[in-house]
Length: 409
Image (tube, rainbow, N blue to C red; front, side):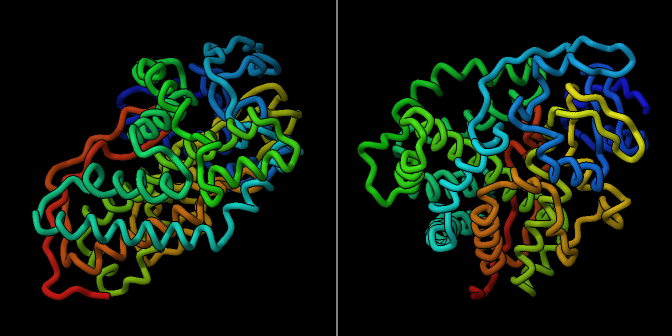
């Protein structure tokens, strides 16, 4: 097994992760990251295997880098993990076995096809209404002025979130995803805002005051019916809300960025609006919002002939797996005609993202709306990316837009 003395969380590698991704590919099926004393893989087939084997690669001890049990069973006598646990475990995401299945069942009852359809329709209405005046300007920040306002209204309204202070959802999501990495400057900057965020969150989901049709209330009540305590039910509805906002913003923002940089690909979407969903899926492949996640080895195992020891942790680099040339021809090329539905950006197996249908629906609606009103879009200047240990999206996306002479359906 090859060792890599590279820090994937350095400012340079977070700004441009491709050099680390290539190094991970060249290292083989699994590498050893000497700085963090964990295994890592950027191979699509290996990542898929791990995500589909929740019994051997568990989530209940955390899906982040840090874990106290990660000091056990390390190769070559390396028994010290430089990270220590610095966060609480997240319901649903960081659960195994029956507990996870019970919480997932509560969500499946509520987040059904009719619910997703209703939220998507409302999201599309909001998106088009906000877009019209922005197009008149000819230049706007597609993330700050369009994507974020839509995402912070459509789903939170349906969920039962108080209207005031919803920007805290973005800060909370950034903190949650920063906390999956090391305790570095990115994490500390997010953590500094936590007292303010915590105060808001304590009043943001007033279950007792929610209309019975609100999603948050329905999930809460379903969890109680399945035997959960009131505290656990409240934690569950918070976890569902937090896990879906930042990643949805990032997925849509990354798609718009990919299209704005490639006029030829945008023309395909304008001419064939049915390609809007493929554009989103391709962007989720080439620029996954969640760049990496982690599992703990519950048993000794072998991957592609390499022995891995129980008690160690493994980084599943979704960004690298999504650019694995063994699985995706010309992986660095963004092509809206490519079928990328098998991307691992939404996870796989038991822990596959519960909100993926809603994210896909919102993204498709927004891309179609823009394609119906804009002949051309372009980036005014190169983007910079959010300084985050896990989440990848531009901080802003200043777009120049040429309106269509006639509105298209």
